[in-house]
Image: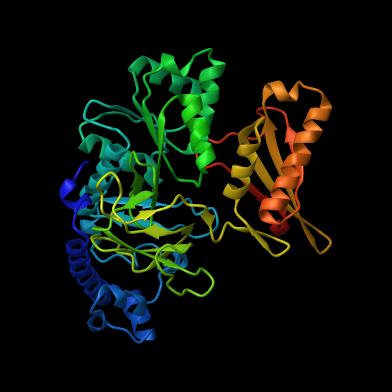
Amino acid sequence: MWNRKYEEMDREKLQVLQFLRLKQTIERVYQLVPHYRKSFQSAGAEPGDIRSLADLQKLPFTVKDDLRDNFPYGLFTVDLNEVVRIHSSSGTTGIPTVVGYTRKDLETWAELMARTLTAGGATSESIVHIAYGYGLFTGGLGVHYGAEKIGATVVPISGGQTKRQVKMMKDLGTTLLACTPSYALFIAETIAEMDLRPSDLKLCSGVFGAEPWSEKMRQVIEEKLQIDAFDIYGLSEIIGPGVSYECTAKNGLHLSEDHFIPEIIDPSTGDVLPEGATGELVITTISKEALPMIRYRTRDITNLNSKPCACGRTHSRMTKISGRSDDMIIIRGVNVFPSQIESILLEMGGTEPHYQLVVERVGSLDTLQVLVEVSEQLFSDHIRGLESLENRIHIEIENMLGVSADVKLVEPKNIPRSEGKAQRVIDKRSL
């Protein structure tokens, strides 16, 4: 462990710490952020009403549009001369979201990423290859400062030029890879194309996040790269990567509750759900200075378990993200997450972990087409074998999800590769 004092803290002591930090955060945003003061008053709440952790439910949610409506600095609680770093979303769908960090915020972030990387096998002797994007995206720099904090050697290569990345990994003796899971698969493909084997590299583990990925995809990555693959989770509005992370038990992602208070809500009603129920993750930050977030709706679907982990950590664990409530596809009234179809595809055998879901509307009827790559060997086989696989996938999707899909097998490397987040869904209904 990186920080045994906090990662193994007794839950009663942890809750005392959480409440103290929560009260300070609530008072801070109420006094310093007009948006929060107005939203609290509209909900009939003020800081004095928060007398326990359960009272957090009295406060309204914060959503991404609140950041856009207060663009760029309206939710900050410090003067700009105290902000030493700005990150931002791309803004491709409108006004970007802007997040800021004080020097203390950056120290907290580095601490959280040190925990994350240590849980994933990193030590001061590790060579960490960071293929997350650098710049306004939080991925690259977040991992970077965490790796430096534990004393590891950092290779800040960012994305792109994948053959060069593989060569650098081989030449420099990289031991830990940090990137999106879809890019890890692309790197594995490139290693094979370069007539190399995983044993030609010194990779031992990888920390992969920024997009949902199934347990089956973990198995594929571990097999193709011959490493231990760990899931990590974060989002810019909360702090960046490092919000939660897997340990060697791989039985949920430890959410650093000394810095964040998690809740699970029904995404339709906003009602808080009991522990163990699956719903939308809501996070309140309790240690951030520049941009505290109160009950931020992440839109990510998961559930929580507060029982101590076999590793000794006591913080609540969240299951792997199954999808996003706003990325969920609704096909003829049926809710479908890409990760559900991913699991079905990878269980079938003969398919590659590269797929796309194309949704269209024909007349008044929604249609779903599933494009999935097949292995080189299967594609060269008799056409009857391909038709049989298509039919089996079609039946399995209908049986498991209750929705009919047109399954189309495509040649290897026919699905576009991504150096960042993979585009799994093409929804033509809104085009």
